[in-house]
Amino acid sequence: MSFSSIFIPGIDRYCDRWCDRCAFTSRCRHYHIEQHLSSKAAPGELDIFNAEFWMQMQLELSAAVHRINLQAEAHPFSPDDAPLSLHRSAREHPCSLNALEYAGLLDQWKSSDRIWPLLPEEAGEIIRQYHYFLYPKLVRAIEVALTSSAGSTVGEVAEGTAKTVLIAIDRSLGAWGLVYRAYPRYEDDVLPLLLHLDRLRKSVEALFPAARAFCRPGLDE
Image 1: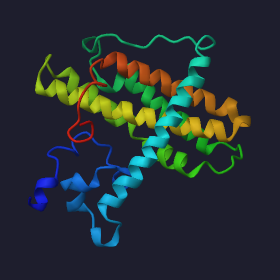
Image 2 (image 1 turned 180 degrees about the vertical axis):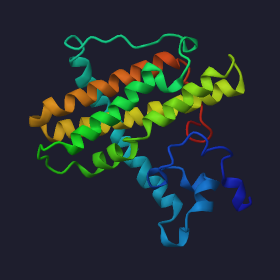
Image 3 (image 1 turned 45 degrees about the horizontal axis):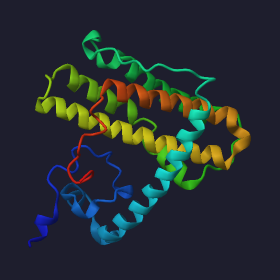
Image 4 (image 1 turned 45 degrees about the vertical axis):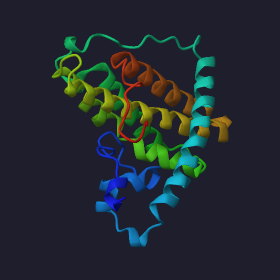
């Protein structure tokens, strides 16, 4: 088997470009082209380490969603699932605006005079990575969806992009859940961010109902 045959075609098409935390660097041609592997750990070693990292964060996500569900009665919410055709601009769609609002909330949180302890390292990495990621990626998914027809290849691109957004939201929820657990006295600061992300997650799921089931090459196989 040639070295090139280990690569999965299109695996980088729906990724989040976070190579340092990817569990599939050994199967990605894009990674091999862009990285100077001689100065890094072997891709296989990175893959194993990162797979364990995301398994732990999946547990944190489950715990965070449980906490959010406990708040459901006090914070009722109905996702915006209006047809895409009712919105002329992807940037003005409620989902996009909510993603932009999350970035703004995080900007306010970072710039506040409140003295915070250091975030758990793994949580801080994830929060910073996806701070400005959600809005442009979601705008892209909606733009593609607005120009596609049912069952088309373009429509699949929209669903795949939306799935990437949902995974980033899931990971962000897990990270904030870890912060919430580490610093319970800051509940009033962290809970609004958890609730906002959960509402955004539900809205994206309503807007792209097939996104979760979309199979990204390599990543979901």
